[in-house]
Picture (cartoon, one colour):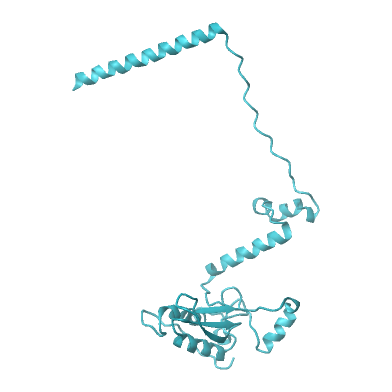
Length: 232
């Protein structure tokens, strides 16, 4: 690709932009295209064969230049790897807003996307390349989880058996895959047998036994108290 060259982000605590709020995205963008990080840095491809950090080298240079000069109350808007405007916002607003690979639904298909990509009108940013946050495997875990969760919701109705029993077992039980899920309720634990009521004589005997136990405990506590006083 025209304009290809090695890119390395600044290190240390020396600013190359006006503030750290713009220095951070600037370093993220450049670090994504570091030869030690990117898959094909000369083609601006970070990972995944097609995931780019910028649409072309001219767009990359424009983003670097804009971030370097961006004021604390301004926001840069990036559309599919190319900066399209800088807006006056405020200090607490985001410094960068990025929208990648968005197409109107009637034209949201791969042939149309490839045609626009060939014309230089869009790019595919994967999950973390076009947003400048690629940090290896750990950066894609969240997006991969969300993808599988969406598949489970669409294909299996979000059924939890997919997680508990595995994909094939869940597919066999799912109504759209030929079988109805097993919805039998688990049987409740057996109740403890009820005791027969005590007779009047048995209740008197029980109360007498309880009084004797209580008297024995009080006598034992008084004996322990006397021994404690003797030890002192």
